[in-house]
Image 1 (spheres, rainbow, N blue to C red):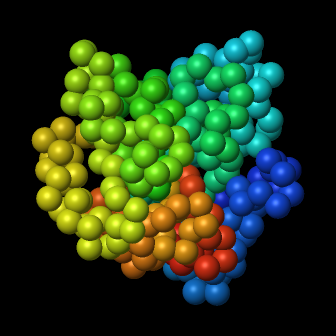
Image 2 (tube, rainbow, N blue to C red):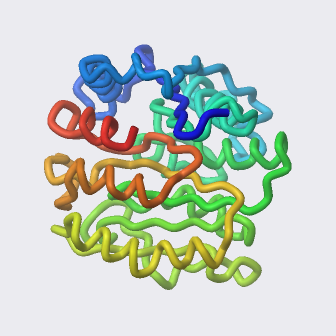
Amino acid sequence: MAKNTLGLVFFPAFDWMISPGHPERQERLLYTRDQLEEEGLFDCEEIKEYRPRLAEIEDLQRAHVGVPAIARLITPAHLTSAGGCLAAADAVMQREVQRAFALVRPPGHHAMRVVHGIRGFCTINIEAIMVEYLRSRYNIRKIAVVDTDVHHGDGSQDVFYHDPDTLYISFHQDGRTLYPGTGFPNEAGSPAAWGTNINLPLLPGTGDEGLHRLYDGLITHILEDFQPELIINSAGQDNHFSDPLASMQVTAQGYARLADKLQADIAVLEGGYSIESALPYVNTGII
């Protein structure tokens, strides 16, 4: 395997939407793909594109309990979004590429262990499904999930809260000012997993300087202490200054520098709703 190789998985989910004008729509990925083609990145021999595949219901059930049944709550788009994450995981674990980025939708980090409908645009937690798949298929134990979405990943926190082998770190706009109203430092994990759930709420208006001060002064040291076998970036991009759903001031360059420091093995797209003005450039910077 050559160093600095990257696998990309795209799934725009043309057949899934909340409503026709909703910001969580297929253009989130189509504009990104146009940008990558314009920049000539698909011509780079270091980049390899993979097709998503359908996840199985059994894959979902490792992370979720459905009420009344998970199969009645999802569409094929959800199985393909999760399957895109599994395809990215396989590409990395089978050493076909060094890292992978699953640019898929619908997103997942608000979906809790018990699924009974849609929460914050999410029905199933695609990162949690991938984590349990990695453990089942490849016997990976210690995994770190770093959530860079502007909204607290309350679903991911719920799934991993009792798991001492999953370090979940979320920085996000303060929950007193933004959905879902959670993600405070005292939410630190259950007694058996105390300290493996790290919430770092940020004041509205935080930009690149504040974000990188947080990473350099705290997050990097937490990761070093935990010593994960794999790092997953739950790559929400709505901390960008132009995002219509939040109030932060991070730039595309700030996101790209963060990705360079984090060196995640697998990134999975989450939020980011400045569909034309930011998302293509943030995705390109991360890639």
